[in-house]
Image (cartoon, rainbow, N blue to C red; front, top):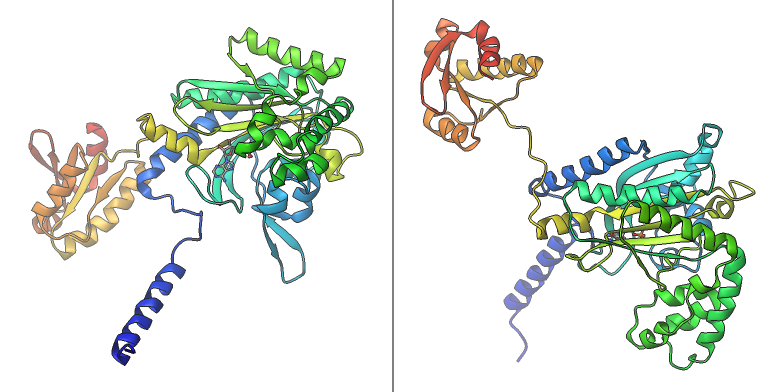
Length: 441
Ligand code: AMP
């Protein structure tokens, strides 16, 4: 029997309402960071900024949009990020811009564009900001996420910088009291030794061409190093016996890697060698690493050396020694919740200003500005009328003092200071209240 017209209409309007609701939700994989979470975020910002200050990294902010070429040339067209994950848009003028999926390429662009290469080297930079990748959202993986990172650009390709980048990264997490950290490290060599390794791994995988996944078949010809990045179940046993990059390093790369490890040993910083760690981006050479915590399933951060990036971008004819690390802030915040690590507390107000009646409200509104000028945080609830209701809020805010301005006080140009602990009240001239509060702090 066909549905009655009324029922059909109702269904249609329910559907429209549902669609309307969905269209007003945040985009897939992008979230609001609500006030309740902000103290944790502030703590991560502070820890990364303090670490940057200590190791002398200067803050840089680059645009959230970059020209597509910055990533296509720098990261490499055969990588997941460029191939599948970039949010690309076309401007009215016809430029192809990208919501930045990472910061290293943008920082190298900025380094040359702003003449930083002419300053004393190396240049040490720090950043904190949002990044965008069109990935399938899941736990710890979003389409808009945040990273902070440290980069050392220019100067020598000294292994001490690789160690310092790793150290700064670890220290920033320790500053947050994140425990059980582990460092996995590998070397992917240079252009010379990588050629040899490429052939070796291609030869090895040729034997299994019928067994490997579709992605790996493509990787084997386009970007063989990325074969080791594969997470597909059926490729794992093959991967386990694959040749390791570390066994094919040329003498200079071997000695560079050994020195990095020696610096880490000197710091008593434990690490484990991971032959499968290659970090798929084209720009990495020599040291690559990732940092984990036992209490979190994915990597908190990672990085490596990227001496070829400037050349790949076409901003320099030869190598620019550089090394960097970046951390996922969402993952760190998630981990802080798991580990019960508290956030940065909001500065507490010392006093709460209570007003009763319209003239008092007007006076109170202006009086807050006197406190603002004096740098003393005073909070209020100007929308509330009754003394009881306002005292209740003051109690909840755990302030030390309540300042009470009633009709009589307005008339007498005075104000009551109430000690919230013992309830003792004192009336002082309104013109002296800022000093009187300051005396009691
Ligand atoms: P990558 O730039 O891919 O080396 O990532 C560095 C760190 O950023 C990772 O270890 C994660 O902590 C974080 N990260 C990368 N991609 C995402 C994402 N889609 N959502 C959340 N965090 C991410």
